[in-house]
Image (tube, rainbow, N blue to C red; front, top):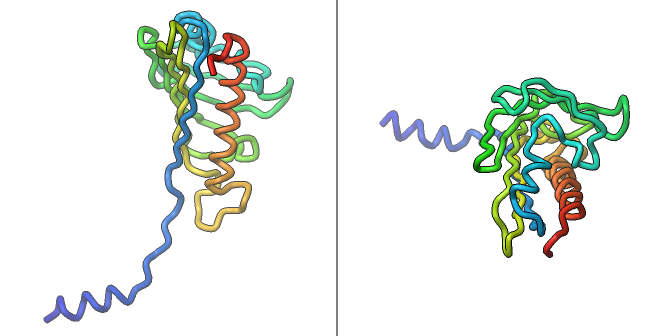
Length: 175
């Protein structure tokens, strides 16, 4: 009898709105260069000079787990992103890192992690994959437009696309 009274009472309670969901972005590009040549350029966690948005990279720890890097974007004194390496496998040509600090005005995300991988591609070339998972920059319900899911996805997509385009220019895209 108690269960019969409880179930209808619970159904009358409105469902609480949930917060943000984890977003994911995966972009790839194929280049004409062999994987080892591409890895030579992008495989050093301490050097992101290949990305056009990165003015400078400073870091400690090389390619060891828990190595850190500080990316300065655009120009000297530009916005920064602090990152930490949590997986690195030179043999498989892949590494994973996460952002430890970034202003949402710079990149409208929170709890961001990313993976960069080089794989053999068609005809001796390479397939470069850059994927990430993150939450939008505003953790509560009803985010402002510049900190919503769409803004976060667009920003991360833009970062990945600019980097992959630069690599395709450098190594010769196959598309």
